[in-house]
Image (tube, rainbow, N blue to C red):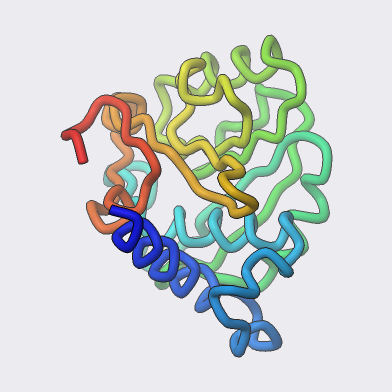
Length: 189
């Protein structure tokens, strides 16, 4: 069981490291902890957008920008990590949001919300839209978020609320789901 977990962690680290800038391409999986947390989270966000599919009205054009919006403390720094990146044929267009009403053009939203009440209000507003929601708080999935990043044994991992994703029309690749620490509303691992 422990070997399976180590293999899963190495595979996940390899996927992440492939997405980081060329200067980090030679970093081994064991050096994952040496990479700043914000940079690792940015790599996860990039991969989440690469392994998600939006319903036809949300992202029809094959080379249209994929709008990734960031909310909360550190959002601008996180957006800088993702500049000039692409999710498949879709270049990322990054936006920093201050109000929930600004989510209209977003395909993905990363919420770094220290207060649960604000986080819940944002997620409630986006619930009926085809927006991939990503966060990093203990209550993120319970509040209706789709992908929550968490710190496990000094490494960033993630969990998925498949029910929320299905409800919004956003599809998540089974390969990504296989790497999740926990999938809520899906088949047991």
